[in-house]
Length: 67
Image 1 (tube, one colour):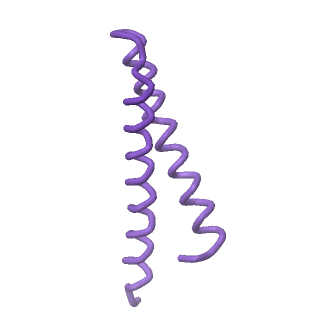
Image 2: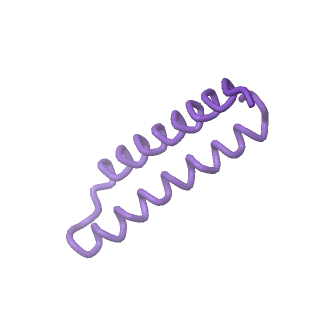
Image 3: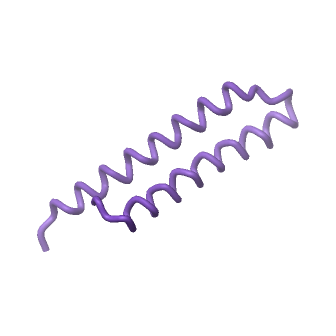
């Protein structure tokens, strides 16, 4: 789990998740109302944290498996 490759992959997934959430906010909010940036950034940050924790958890579970 503590390899450079793992952390680079995890960082990439986390950044993509944050970007996807922000794009969703921008797309929806522009058509309905002005963008609430505070809400958009908080939501994106929480989604990014969830992605980071999911990557760590899945890696830990997979490392514990024996083949």
